[in-house]
Amino acid sequence: MLSELIDPPKEGAVLGANTKKLKDDEKRAYQEKIKKEREGKIVRLLAFLKRQKSPVATYEIASLVVNDSEANGADYRVVIAISGVESGFCRASFSYNCFGYLNGAHYGSFMQAFSDIVPKVARQYAARYGWNFEALAKAYGQHEWQRTSANMRYFANQI
Image (cartoon, rainbow, N blue to C red; front, top):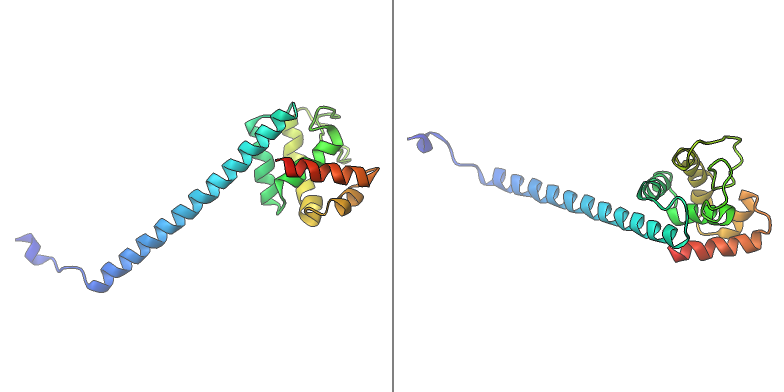
């Protein structure tokens, strides 16, 4: 018989396999949790942009803002709050630039502008200053920084 030729697994091997499976399951559960949290952020941002009647209220833009902000160590709510005070969430943009970011570039679409500007704004301003909107507004060069910092705080808290 074939079963007589095969040695049964050793107790340590079974324990090791069970431990590995448990770790793999925990890793998958953690990755699923992160994915659900990110999806929740995207959905909240999209709903907020729709309430603002923003021309960039699309899943693609919301996803880009969340992903690029987090990839650069910033809170996506701070990044989008900047666009709120600079352009009314893109209702008044110049060459699709919703951030007033004076990099001299002209863009052919909102997606092109957001792909270029969001990582820069996230890294240079939102990650550095976080929810310290007064310091952020001053560093960003916003006129009437007291008013714009209060508005940014208000917008970020609404998401």
